[in-house]
Length: 434
Image 1 (cartoon, one colour):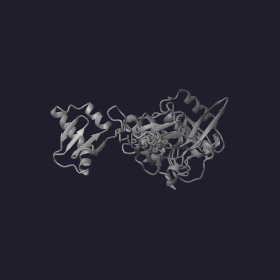
Image 2 (image 1 turned 45 degrees about the vertical axis):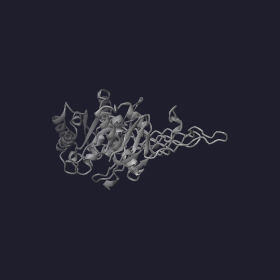
Image 3 (image 1 turned 120 degrees about the horizontal axis):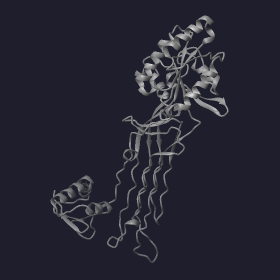
Image 4 (image 1 turned 60 degrees about the vertical axis):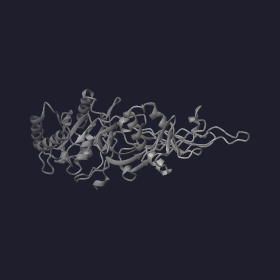
């Protein structure tokens, strides 16, 4: 049944490609040489994450692993703008942390975020040729291509948002406690790992007081090393501000409560040193199955070992004995417990993570009027000429490399250029050499 536990998911996300700008010219009666009227391409759709408070698991992501936004449409004639691509909106439960799959670094902690989060922006639509007319180039035959899509593989991790977390070995009564003190109705049975998904419940104490409690599934020794499902369960405890450490004081299964507390404290410390320092209450459960003379002896043994640093509260989840005292003590702890454990700091700059190199358009053509002359034009070429000194050796070398890296030499070869032919780049002319 382990595969039902869904607190982590790996998914592929892709924004929409920007639509290409269009190349066209006015064709009207009595206007023999109409100007450029190519429209702009539409913007690609974004990849957007939003919190859905009705969700408490990442199970849906086990079935759908790819999410793609719509591409922008190409621009049209008569300055018609292409339609924008549709956003893909991904709903996640509160407490979801989005990480880069390759590095494991935190991109954003959605926590209980109210506003949508755009992870990947769609590519901007390219400008149509109407934008590139100048006094020297009145009929541009190029348009700007749309920006490419962005795609990433990411990890979603659900870290439950709760004020108080119930921790302890399996079958110590955590689910029973949660069901008795809150509106949660977890499934309960007497065997290990009954609870595979952490349950959340709201505890009401009256007079507007209360808190959210989470039943963290049973931890076993070795959890911090990933034994069983333990590592997955430990992720949820990071959110909680106060821990209720539940033990079976009656030793129904022959376990030693003190050894259990030490073992789980060590698991918490191995996973995160901060967890071991979280405000904690030891809840000695199952008093109802102990003889009266044994009850006092066991409780005193626990108090001698852990108090005054950690309060020990004896209860019986079955009969309700001591439960109110446990809840009131937890509430008082929350009033002074630090709030800074609730959110994970981004470890990646979103600007760097989603950087995109903009590709400006250009054209490579064979002259229709002169034999052996080839024309290289366009905004990308103009931009390069603006920061390159072609009369300098280093500048000319940069120009040659630019022509190769941008595929311009390959395009000239495809058009049939031969040694000795002329390449004209705006006001510059070069003899082509193999």
